[in-house]
Length: 132
Image (cartoon, rainbow, N blue to C red; front, side):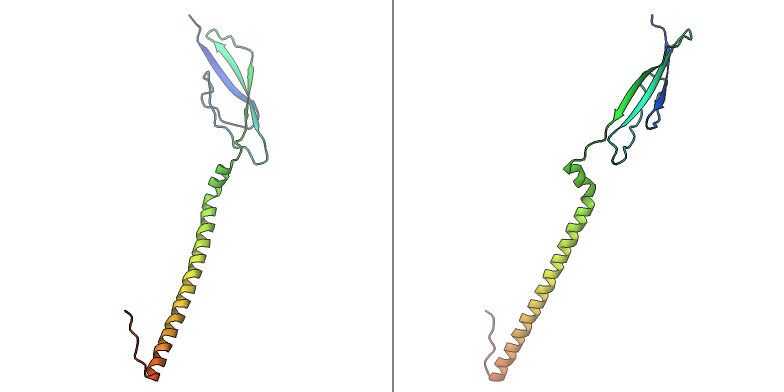
């Protein structure tokens, strides 16, 4: 029958993280956020096992290297999507406002020409033309 062991994990170097389950066979931790311009972060952990008679092992170490994800076009877009949408929306709004203003001005000028034409016809005694 296997003897029960206890485990003691400690972090000996690297970016500090909090181990969950530091007395289990497989502790976990959340990978640290890697600062911009840094290519990776290495953390070193030490494990000492103790048997039920109190005998302890020599410390063994494991190194874990965290490498940040490489940014892709999709992740760059996703990170800047709100800004891109705002720029597109602002440009579209400006363009539509400009077009609407120009159309209103043209419609107003056409209306004024029509009214002036009708007034000239009345002054000259021509019957008013009706739309069919």
